[in-house]
Image (cartoon, rainbow over all chains, first blue to last red; front, top):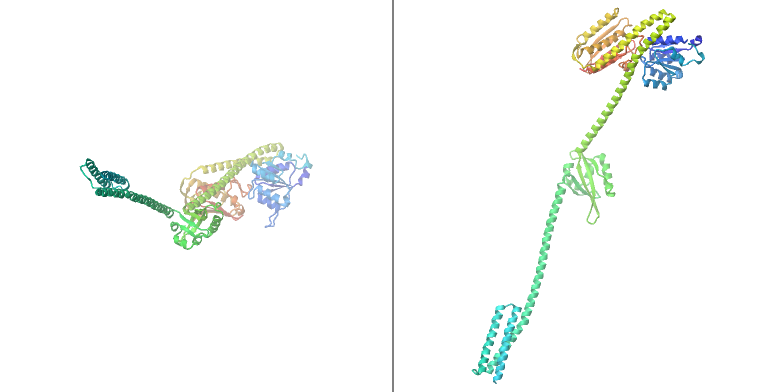
Length: 140
Length: 500
């Protein structure tokens, strides 16, 4: 089962190295090993959409995006907005990782169609509860 | 013979008495009392004398003369007739006298009436004069510029005060009825024309108007105009009476009041907006704080859970990593709390201004930073004698943060250099701290001073995101402002003023 999960690509957008470590640790536990990390909003968007001026695009077409809301340069909400505005990433599954309780943030996230808002650091049981991969039941 | 004599004498006596009687009667007609009494007395005395003659005759002492007696009788008769004839004469005289008196009375009456009439007229004239005087006083001494205008626009009356208001004499208005329209402000002419036309077509629906005029000396004045129709004694329309008052002062006050109100409203709106913005900022700041405190605690919790798993699965490398990170997380948490307390202290502290040597403090701070890092070399220069008026400890915190940032962001540069200096912009002293470190994209410059906002990720450069927000507060408390110029990998320069 875990092998089947290996191909699912995940983009983790997180600037804190501990939170990144936890996210990767948890993802690894459920078999998601194909994880790319972006350390700020700008880098993440560069990976997803490329930069037209610089004609650079670090190829990344993730099935799941794990997005922190507090990010350097371009914050998480703006990143989410641009993900949803772009045809290429309009429908991708986005999970928000946050320690914030700001209702405004949560409301905006819901409007922009996120699958879930998860507390940081990422824990295995909350991820499993989401049942993101019905075909891969019992991975944990 | 004797008997004839006696008869003649008797008749004569009778006539004598009758004549006396008639004479007395005439008193009432002619009024000449004494004359008639004397005449009557004459007659009576004559009668008495004849009676004596008669008695003598009867006594035979006298013979009597018939001729004489006949003459006497004739005299008596003539006298009687004469007296008797006086009656109608006097009656006539009396009547004509009465008529004359009557006429005289009538004339007197007419005269009296005429005199009364004349007196009345005089009185009426006086009243009229007084009334005229009163009206003249009312009109001529009117405080307002009054006029009486015909439908064709010509003036029937203008009060002299028009000169005080317009600078033009009333004679000029009489000569040129168009003058009024010529001095009305071009922007208000339409209002006046509309009003004038309406006034003569529908006098009940016309309302007072305000318009401006340009006086002879070129001043602009506001006129408050009210008018009403005039009707003659037969009820026919006879032009309009208008009062024009100089309301410039009132208008100016109104305008000032209006301007004040607008300004006040604008200020209230601005304050409300500002307050709403501050509230929102505060709210967002509270969420930021809670986030910044919760995040490291959540990490510590997660690390403790991970520890158990690592022990179970025997991952010694990870165990070591976790232990190390617990230490880092704890330190971070403490730094966030310290920074928040510091920021709070800054907000509450009142400034203790004195001379502060920025150059000297910068040098000390950099030496401390170098000592703490142990193995870094930095080319540092500070313009000597940058002495400012400010709070020494707060400016120290400021420089600590700014130099700390410069120190941190030059860590990955081979030949790091930091410069502290001064320049001038529009006559104001501007201090700067320049480094040749990582720099940042100016597109994100507006986020630079927001609490907990970072332009670099934590794995590259550590930080709690409160440093620059604190610096900004201190600078603003000093009445100055702070800004930065930079480009990625080209270093950054932070400029600030201190409201000197």
